[in-house]
Image 1 (spheres, helix red, strand yellow):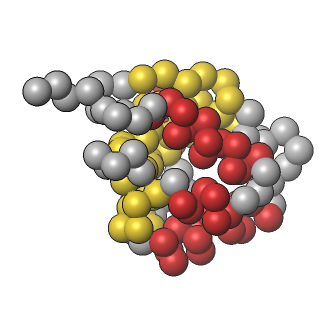
Image 2: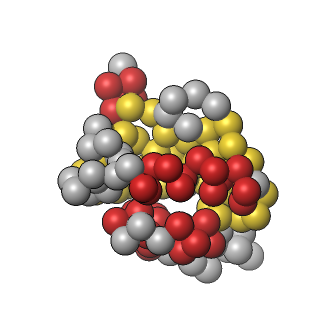
Length: 117
């Protein structure tokens, strides 16, 4: 039996960034498992939909016009990495892990400067 996933991880990440660009909080949260975890760039961990909503809503409302532009998108052994411009237009790298159903089960981000070190 093959370990090939029945969904396109890269497409899910593109949908994730599109939800940000369009400021669609519900569409963003729907991409995550209900019990997913966010390890945020500023430190801290948010788990579950209510906590993720509390984390993402202010970022969407404070986002600038140049936010959420993709700089690089590449597959990793266990997921996908995305380099993009965060809500404040600063470069960020986010790593995505997925469930077997194609939902995001974890995201972890860090500033690009930290990622390059």
